[in-house]
Image 1: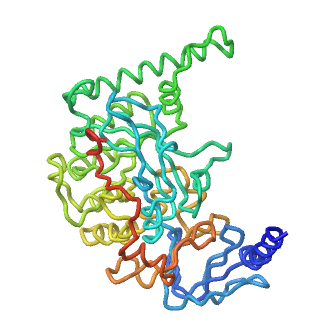
Image 2: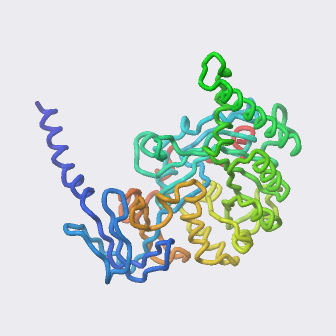
Image 3: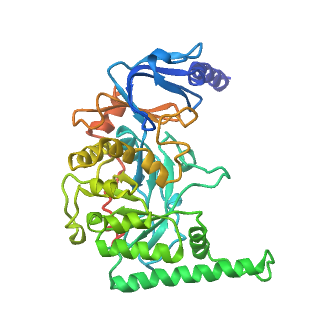
Length: 434
């Protein structure tokens, strides 16, 4: 009897919350940066049931009856940030038994209760491409996550229109994968091994086609080949770790040979081969550093990459590679890039819609437009100012970070208990080089 009364009490307590979530929410008077259009100096954002209902100037806003109003005067609202390359959640990928392991799924290794996910929310990140490391030529399948508050990985998954889990495939070249056998010892051997596997995938695909559904004629199931076939058929994007200019061109060469879609990541020496990157049509996800260094192959990294690639006409996004760059400071990537010549417009796009395009989610996230998912952040000031703080973060209209909440503030600024259960991740140097 006591348990029944307790259950009824809990339900009654939750009713106001459920009703509040079901009501339209209007954020009034903020300076709004929609990304999809000019900034609105005094605007109104209306969201309902996880979607954006309207965004525009306050004087012409149509606010539904019964809406909950939130005073946002003096604040800035912009889309939630899209991190195209992250390692939050203590993620693990391939092991040391082979350099090519496309069958590995980071889906099976993410701790959704990791403090680093909450720190990413504190940095305004609402969507992340969570990757295995770069110590392998192919280290596994990446996962596109919405940084909702959740108890299991299923609570954070993004699914496409057919219900498939959204994600890509991690590839790498350069120094990280060059080590003792069974790994390749040279750059040329690295490319040869990758080429060999994609040729096998082409042959596997052809056998499946010829079988035409006849189980007797089907080849023995091969999870590695199935993944590479998805890449060949454009169902899975390759996210390619690469630094040196010659490694960048090798990645482009392989992608063009096998006709797969690719995003180039890091690209420390992009400024050396910007015309070639532009001619390839592949987008670039840059890491922007406040203290360059750490790898010989990245010694010529430049924060001018954003400006140089923008001028060349390349689609540019940013990423944290968390914990190489702390997710809580993701906004700084745009500020550094602007300081080194990138336009404000393209730098802000690189934090939002450009990343959404790289994950093929641009119709759902990346800008503040009616009908899109209500992922947005509330800032204390201009996003490029060193003094600006992320005040609130919303995923699909639900608040997942509130700086005024002492528990959330702990993740934003650090302190005892803020990193409990976390593990340090250095991309490429996890157990014999991840």
